[in-house]
Image (cartoon, rainbow, N blue to C red):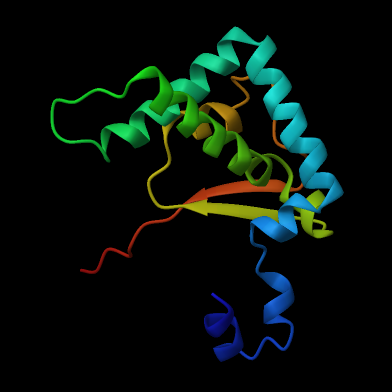
Length: 137
């Protein structure tokens, strides 16, 4: 990612790519992550949506006809909850006015999240786009 940004002439490319170490020490990310964990523990609908999303991801990773066990689902949920702050409020995390999260094949939970169907909603300034290759005539 840094190489791609460098190739576009971004002198600050190394500061624009956030890994886990940078996110763990980011106050806004920590606050959002804690909020997601709390919601998962307390909100049955939110919990079900997170579990459904991770089931969808795991189904594509497991051998055919194998369903994920409870431990696999819970581990996958933890990964999803760690990614969720970026869907909710990237502007707060990176100190920007706006951000658009782009995804090529989003799970239904993201459509529900951005559609206002869940109790946790994206912050003002946080957008979402589904990207697809251009169709040529």
